Length: 210
Image (cartoon, rainbow, N blue to C red; front, side, top):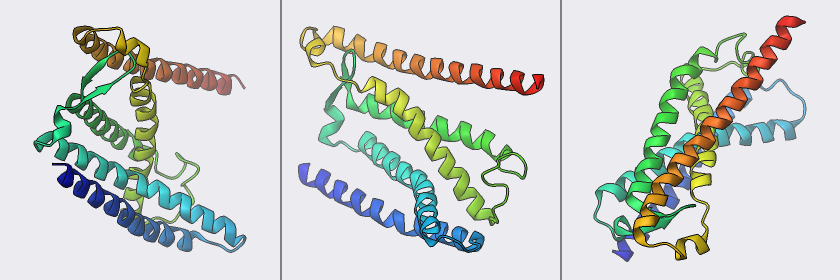
């Protein structure tokens, strides 16, 4: 099983590398079409930055595909455990939660975001000349960035490991702590969104009062 896992890891690494090629090709088309002369260094940096934006959802897709394979195939890591901030639980359940979170984030983002990628709504893109498929890649890229931030807040928090705490508890306590950790991580996300929403509302009031 270790050999199989190594091959799967190798294939995943190759896929990550190959995904960068179409990402750079698509971003290159966009940059060259919208390049009006000037600093070539700036154009190159924008080329790479836009390529990274387009690459983000491709990497997420490959990562989630790997997670699905690990969930449905009887590999040794399906039985492994993973430590989180307040406990320990099944790696299978951990992967399932993170996979479901990613699907939800992409779904919600792609539902609301197209309403902003129109002239006058998103200043950074209103002057760009984009083809239909390129616009779709940009949308997916932005959804990928949203997913990275949400994942950073949720899985980043829940994955904090406190070894002394884990050593002092039995398995029942660790299992309960595993679920408590996830609840707390989603509360962190909720509080962050509420703070951001409050600042946006304050900004709207300030604009209306001017």
